[in-house]
Length: 187
Image (tube, rainbow, N blue to C red; front, side, top):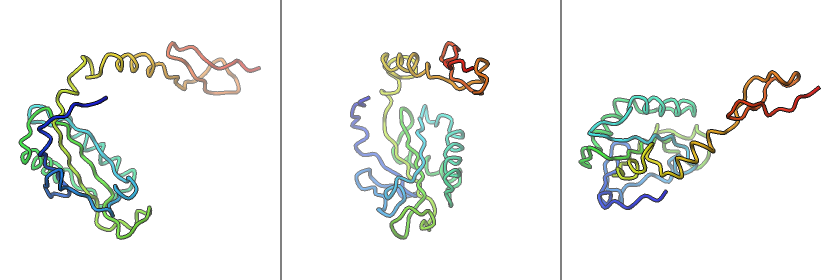
């Protein structure tokens, strides 16, 4: 969905490894894993009335994602929270803000996919933008009516794998959203 331009985002400050810089001057090294091969994890956070919604859960999910990819040198939660706070204060943001919290595997000493060539630890990137109108429009879940219909009717009718009592040789079958077995009875 197209999001309208917000002129307040013109002078937003971005935080890269604790260094605040204007969005037009911020940069990540071409040797960073996120640039070379898209090796990064991220979470999208919302700021409401000066508080980040479910921050603890987001940080836990971000840490688990990085652990699954075996990131080394992942920043501590206290450091991330301090940098988030510092970036929000620098931008004077208190409500209606979307925060993109990204962590890459870090800098590589040469080009390549092997994670062993990352030597400097993870790169922390915090990007903030004003986006209140997009998320509060359209009633439930902030989605337009057509999208709500799609998620309610089409996506929810996906078939599920469940134990089957009709098929002897096959242990599992697919059932539609009404619970009817779609397997063909085999002799």
